[in-house]
Length: 310
Image (cartoon, rainbow, N blue to C red; front, side, top):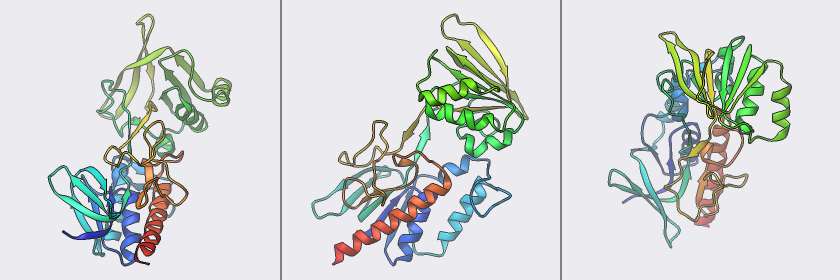
């Protein structure tokens, strides 16, 4: 079995960038991905804030360009889901795949990202990309001058509601509790904003719409069961994110939510294991930051391997 210099797990923006930098450094690289190249950008209708594309670019188009950039290099593409990464005494890693195979590598770069927790409300999946979004920075501009709903009560929900309030007509913040969890500075600002309405003590029962996309949200009071229909063309859901990190060794340090802790060079608490992109414990989760993480992780992994051979 071939021992790769690096196994990059996940082929989103962070993973593609890490693999590109590693292979250009003359290292042998296996890139493991469960599905199509691109990660979460494949579910983004259009990206308007990635440098170099002032007119915006569709998510799938950017994914294709990332993939094409890597196509000319001798990267071993491995299709499969990683079940576990085992750190061995000889400092190498054994990577077990759900399909029954396995890989061996001197370093591991984890780039499997995270996924948004969903509400599970009727219409959420139906109108994904046609009104339902999990990123105001990514999609907020499509709703300029319109009415939108934000769901959640933490910092992310309040920050994104404030961001949206500057570009949309009106923001309704729906939260199941009467009190918010977010920092008081954000709470004060949303209460002061003239075009933000607080809909507390309520949950989303249904997201409605038609062929053109969503057009309204049905909310229900938790205490009385009374329902209300809010007319809105967009809904931004912030009920938490979950990292895809369960396959990594238990010794890799995580934060309270399970995201991987790294230093500025993307090094984890286990030597030889690096993390990049949305799987990391950090604030900014954007394509541009994922690309930067991937380049940094690859550079750190290359330096680690130079010390290995010294």
